[in-house]
Image (cartoon, rainbow, N blue to C red; front, top):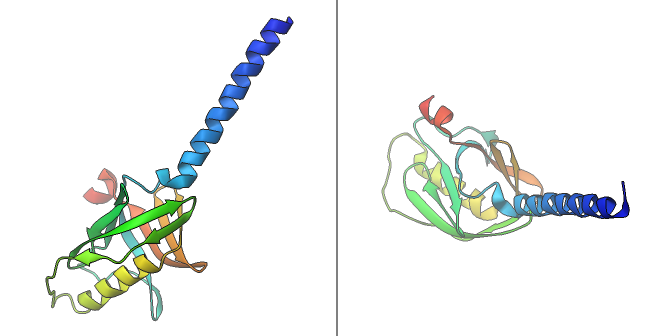
Length: 151
């Protein structure tokens, strides 16, 4: 190879490395968390990690600085900010329905919204989202896909 070909291949290699760096930066800045709908698989309650009460759904969709979803009984929304793997979720607003059934739904809703607001880091591993506070996992979600929605 002559010098001109070496330069050409060097530029191509540098461009490829640059593209990989940009993709990595996009993923670490929250690209994986946003635009996807998540459903809680486990939440940290007073007694430790627990599954949501049967008959309730705890969901979250992160989009354009607003997280919204269902908190077991009511719909909610809150602002959020991402910085790398750090997350800050503000206080939630919600609809004001009361759900007597299933038993414990209203307490679970308050726990869920409190845990969301307490989260300070997030991690996405494939179709699993983990929110943590002070190094302790507080919420584990799985992505709602056509497969999970159907089954």
